[in-house]
Image 1 (cartoon, one colour):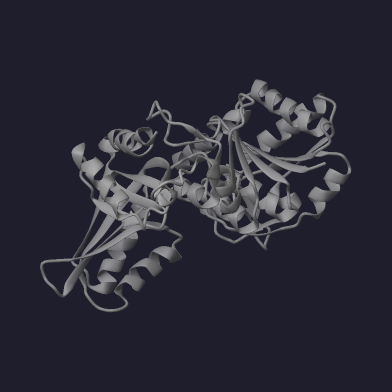
Image 2 (tube, helix red, strand yellow):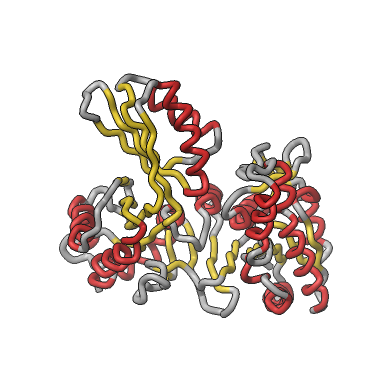
Length: 420
């Protein structure tokens, strides 16, 4: 008997018929002898509707009350699914973060998980229940409701998997796994049977929407195997696991002749239009300036991604550019204006309508020719690069959002389709 955690997104529980289908799948696992915990999101569209409601009432809703409002969506899902499971003859109980003591930091709308008290969940499992748990939410030490931000239900499921030492975490969505590119953009995109934590983390952080980066980080830290599957069919999906297992499964595909063993294996091409760029220009060129800029942004819980410092015409001044999520752009610009005065910069500018396109594959950084080919491919297609970021397994470029589909298709053809 295994402990299986399943997570279902909003489309999987969007209406009564879909909830019934999820219940059938859950009961099938239970009847096979497994303990089952199900983490669910709010019904599709519900969270967006609640956000809209809040902003109809206030231009700047109180974050505590905002979290209280948003968490009501998951309440609908957990109770509905528990009812549907019991209708099929299995015991079920719905639980929320308060009942489980799912502790987080006291940061409304962007809380981080601190600890999970598994006692109540284990008791309910021992009583023969399917446990249906509300994703996306937590409570502080003072019992204030918090939300985990985007991808919070994925993060909840994997965190529960770690805390309870689950055998597997299954993430069910409206797609049937991880592809080499978004199949809505690239018609020849291919589904991956397996992918390493490292590659999945880079794909997720670079725009792939099938799994949130925070959930991958937790899975990698605790060695939790994630199985990405579709809610709407029984296909195998994609398994995310540690690199040693990934290598064993993939070795059969490695050509050991010549230098092919060290050849870069591209896992995928991904993109994100959820980007904004800010530039502080005329920044004094002296120690501590960058620290003042980014520590202030960090204090406000704003994550930066690609960072570029460049010289201005005046050699004593620099320009500092960085990207943030588009949802944070307005606040980040306001903070940058305050920082400008504090550090004596000359001005602040910002850009919308930009996008990030990324190539992910183990060994990219040590293969300079592959990096050059990425830039050549974009140039051949008339795509201008605004900013560049490189890591061991990721090369990301900031481009105009109108060029995204062309860039992804060109890179996919060059590095995946042409490698067959």
